[in-house]
Length: 214
Image (cartoon, rainbow, N blue to C red):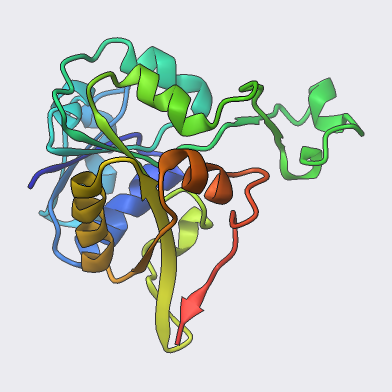
């Protein structure tokens, strides 16, 4: 079972670290190309390799780890998902220029964090992602915790919880196997339309909660 990670920022690099620490292989990619990832893959060891976005997207399981605003641009050039599994690790938030009016908007409850909620209407974010990866089996995961704890699944003498959700039982089972292999305690929140909003930033009631099973 091959794993691809599209996006090499804080989320993508920390998912790669979590996999590497348990000896799991993956290919990581960004729009700048494999050469830009030389230092990262050198740090992570020989189980993580750099590739193109197309190469990462050809894996059996593909983790989407790019900013919300980049999704359509990056995914529009890809096709033929053919039932492969896409892990949606994204959240519908926009990062603000600290000098912009939005960053000082008193009506934005997230301004102090340098973000604002993206306008996605009355849809949940994974439904939008699913439209961008037609034919894929989408599972929501890796999105609700501070990304910096992803390489540290053990905490306080126990296991950190990672929530996941999806509409395909087999796809969820395969994602659960990956979460368990990286040392987390996976908890199934049900279907995408139920579990996705529960754990999505910025306003999901389970978002940012760092649960640990002792």
